[in-house]
Image (cartoon, rainbow, N blue to C red):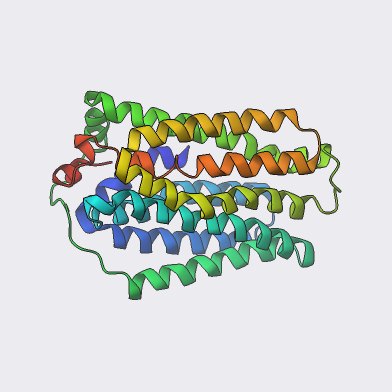
Length: 284
């Protein structure tokens, strides 16, 4: 909720001052949030940090924007799905690492580790990433003006609606997957590790298939690949209902991941005028 309020404003800052600076800012915010989360003493402190996280983060969107505006048009699909592969790698190692650390030490140590990993990646961006000054705007962009742009552009509105629906679909499952693993017969003592392993299967599928989707999108078009990915992801999600054991559920999660890994990057580079580099000063 907090992120929804501030994302357009943070996007306008990226258009004015550069995406690299927004990545560094967001990385430092995440480092602070995760580090402080490891030492909170009550739920209200945790809630405040989560709100702070939502208001000032935006790490991944800034990275996608940087890649999207610094990549030649003919290689855009491949570049963005390479980002998807990198994110999939994180979805493999993250849940497994978090589950192992939580089991061996505790959840506080997992949050602290996440904070220092974010700090490390932010330093890599600071010293190793070069941004071309593409489409930077000197104009002060109004947040309400950005919403007016969205409302007047039917294609962009549909892309944003698609993004909301797919995000809701994914996040509906994520909060309950650990409980579902226990319901399928997993040990409560190992639930964090098992849930992390099952989460990682979708990430493994992403590593194997994301760049293939990107190359295909560059050849046949983003819309065709996106349609296939959405249908396959939907069928893969429905298939998870049919299995009542961990192995069957794990296999369907992998199949779902093989399709869904194409959904995230493709709308970011769809062929709509508002995403053209000439209009990047008006982007969200």
